[in-house]
Image 1 (tube, one colour):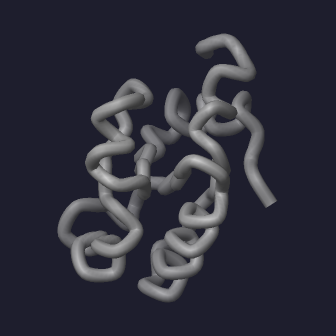
Image 2 (image 1 turned 45 degrees about the horizontal axis):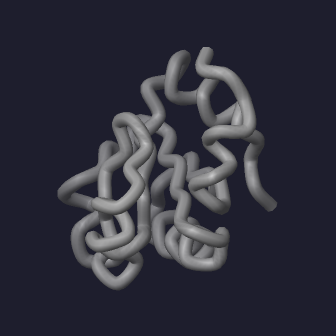
Length: 98
């Protein structure tokens, strides 16, 4: 289940949520969302603890929502308490900035 664009932007504004792009570096370079950190899915289990703050919500996304779903499961298994899946990065553009 994906969270809405509005909820994504609200979490970033109100709770300083971390926006994580789990696509490849090449995909990330071609289309970046503002403030997003690129941690490719194949690296997330190894580097999440060093790059992400467990005290802030994490919002993951990718191209279609499949890789971000897997990343969400990995982060939850690593005891990140609040992990949301925005799904496809294009969802970002479906609502105005908050």
